[in-house]
Image 1 (cartoon, one colour):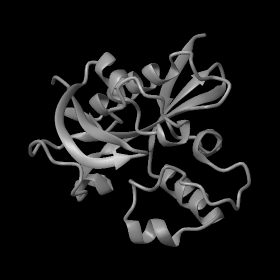
Image 2: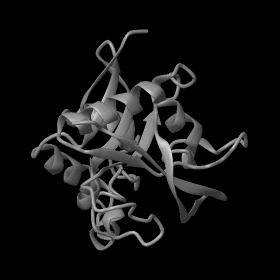
Image 3: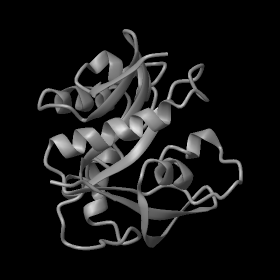
Image 4: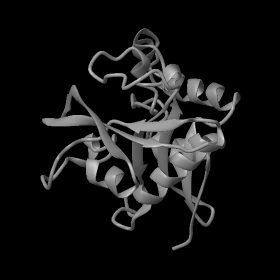
Amino acid sequence: MALDVRPATVFEDVAALVGPKRPDAGVCWCLSYRIPSKLNNELRGTARGEYVAELLGSGPIGVLAYDGAEPVGWAAVAPRAATSFARNRRIPHVDDLPVWSLWCVRVRPGHRGKGISHVLIEGAVRFAAENGAPAIEAYPLDNGDAKVDLTMAYPGLRKNFEAAGFHHAADTTSVLNGFPRVLMRRELGS
């Protein structure tokens, strides 16, 4: 399998990874950390997808992994200052660097277990570096060897970020699906 990771710019490809099976269904569209909570709560059904289409009109909103022409993976990545992590009291700020955040890694069913999440993490790191990020952070689950419900594994797993050269930068008070989240960081040389 030859994977290609590219900036997410095509609405249909983003929708294939983070959109609903039914256009009116209430799914995240990976907006929960990208937009203010008031707006996130107001957007319902098709309005969520329409909002994502508007965002894409301004440029990439993450990266997609492709197997040939088929989108098979997604990673949400953006400057931390442009996300709710900028104000999140449970996820600390390590310093004043204008870091980028990587908060969602998703692989389509039927493509899991093939290392795609590792390729997505590297693609997100490359995208952040190409856009001037001095460092990139992630807030994965620290699950040890415990099994994680795939629905709740979207922030990624600590071991996958360690394998990608991230280091533990801080503990957080955030817990998801019973697992603590940790702040992992990778410096991006200039």
